[in-house]
Length: 418
Image (cartoon, rainbow, N blue to C red; front, side, top):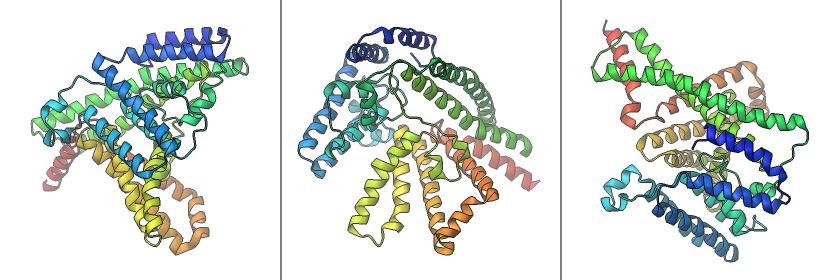
C-alpha cells in the first residue's frame, strides 16, 4: 500500500471522521497504534522479518535506557557501530558480496522503512544519553518508530516533537478553513504524485531508454540530438523526484494533522537555494538537519576539542564525509556513494567560498555579497544545476548512470572531428 493509493486515502478520510469521536487521548492513541500495526503488517512479508524488526526496535529502547543511566561514549559508539553493521547486513549492501559468506546475505528479511528507522533510532539513543528526552516510554517509542505517516520515507521527526503531539492527539481543527487546508494538502499531494510526478517520470524513462538504445547499438547521434536527450534526463529526473517526494510529504503531513499528529516540514522551495548547504536545509530538510546534528557536528566537535587550530580546515572534510555517508544510506550500490560524494564536495566548496570571502572582505563584505540580486540569481542557477549533476547518479547503478554522459561525449567527439 502506498500513501497515494485509493485505499490509503480512503482509510485516512474515514479516520479523520472517526478520530474526533473517540473520547480520550488514550483511546485515540490505541486506535492510531492499531492503524500503525495494520499499515506495517501490509508491508512485512514473513515471520523472520517480524522477528528482526522486533529485535531492532527492542535494542534501541534498551540501549537508550542503559545509556540514560550510564552515559558512556564508548558504549554509545559500540551500539551505533553494531546497529549500523546489522543495518548494512539486512539491506544487503553490494560490497558485502566480497567480504562475507553468501549464506549471510541469503536471508528473507525485508524491513520497509528500515533506513528511516535507523536514523530515528540513533537520534533517540543519542538524545536519551544526553538527557534530552525527559519522559521516555516504551509505548511512545514504539509508536514513534512505527508511525505510519513517517514510516516509508520520513520526514525524520525528533522524538521530542512526536511526543508533544502524541500525548495530546488533539484532532479538532481551529476552524473550517484550517480543516479544509488539511484535506486540500492531502489532495494536492496525490495530484503531485499520480499526475505531475508521473508525467515527468514517463518522459524521463522514454528519453533514458532512447539513450540506452543508442549506447547499446554504438550509434552516435548528432550533437543537437544528444544534447536534447541529455538535458531531458538531466532536468526531468530531479523534477520527478521533487514532485514525487514533496507530494508524499504533503499527504503524510496533511494526513497526520487530520488525526492530531504534527510532522515537520520537509521542503522549502529547494530550487531557490544559493548553495549546497542552503539546499539541504530546504530539500529533505529533516535529513539535512540530521546530517548536521548527528554526523557533521560530532565529527567536527571531536576535532575541535583536540586541536582547535585545525578545526576550521577540517570542517571541509567533515562536510564531505557526512554527505558521503548520507549518500550510502540512500541505497546499497556504488552510485549512491557518488551521489553523496558530489554533494559533499559541493557543501565543502560552499563553506570554503564563504571562508575565502570573509578573509578577503570581512563579514560586512560577505553580507554585501549575499545581498547582491545578480549574484543571488547566479548562485541559485549554479546550485540547482549542481544538484542535477548529482542526481544523474541517483536512479540506477553506476554503469547505467554513466550512459547519458557517454552518449553526449561520443556526440561531442564526433562533432569536433567533423
